[in-house]
Length: 239
Image (cartoon, rainbow, N blue to C red; front, side):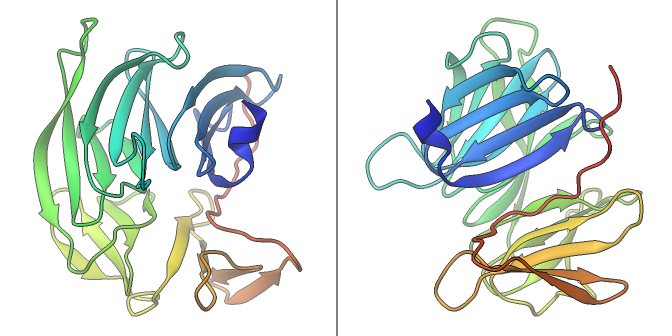
């Protein structure tokens, strides 16, 4: 299992920083208790790109495209049954999944759309994700997607732009700072400071050794690193 975490696609905090959610393009995914380091869940996820906790002690993993294998899907699992897929829905090149408790929707991006899924038959052993909202992307290849704190927006990067997606009106608008920024591989707004953090791919590669920050504008260089998705990490709170 260790070999499936060679290339981390996403490592993000959950539950006020008490858990870490990890997805790996080397085909792994895991939920880790941050205080103890205990692996609470793990699964094989072909070209794993994103992971999210769902109500009912469940987890969803976005497995992106692979030439041969079971990628291009969102897979649902019970948190206490590692590796046992309960359901999957096919979707092209998914890169991000976000649970929206206020709207009771799972948001996922793909090559073509942002989709809001309802949790259907969730109290049974055969849960399903049912598309409720389908918003075609203004351009192609949805990439990173994260909530903007204290707003209805998701910040979403695509191949050539960065957008704000309104979860109530389902409309897209260019981001005021990054609207015309191409190859943004990750973008996150700090819930505490509201400061913007992002990574842009360099040339033909999907990583960078430079982190960009806004308000105030500055950069942080990590020589030799191949940084893909960046996340603000809050202090871990006790359970």
